[in-house]
Length: 151
Image (tube, rainbow, N blue to C red; front, side, top):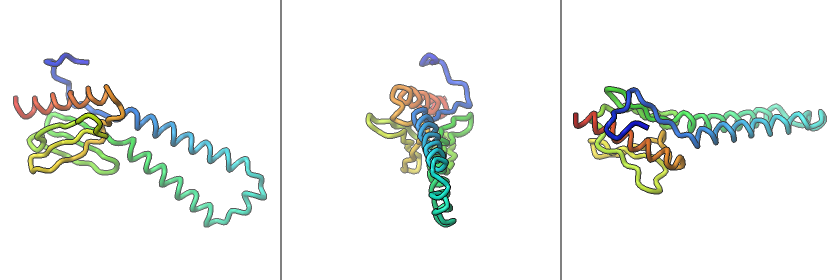
C-alpha cells in the first residue's frame, strides 16, 4: 500500500472481491448441481419434460447468470480526467469537478459519491462486505479526488 503522501498511479480500478468470489463460486456451483441433476435423471424422467419446461429452465439459468454477471462486473475506475462507475449494467462517467465527496459510513453496503448537483450516486465497485480492503479503497479514492479537485 502506498504511503499517505504518495499519489496512486492512474488509471486505478477498484472491484469488489467478495462479490466476485461469491458470484464465481455460487454460479459455478449452481451450474454444476443442475448439470449433475439433469444427467442423473433416467431417460424416462428426462422425456417427461416438455420443450416449454426445458426453455423455462434455461431462461431461469440465463437470468441467474446475468444477475451474477451484473454484480461481478461492478467497478470504480479513476483516470486522469474522470471517474467511471460501473454498477451492474449501467456505466456513469463523472468529471472530477462533478464529484464533491466520497462517503463510506460504517455499515454502509457500498461507497456513495456526493455530486456537485446535490445528488448522490452509488459506487458498488467498493463493497462494505470487503471490510478492511473496502475501507482502504475508499481512502484511496478520497485521496485521488483530493488530488484532482485541490491541486
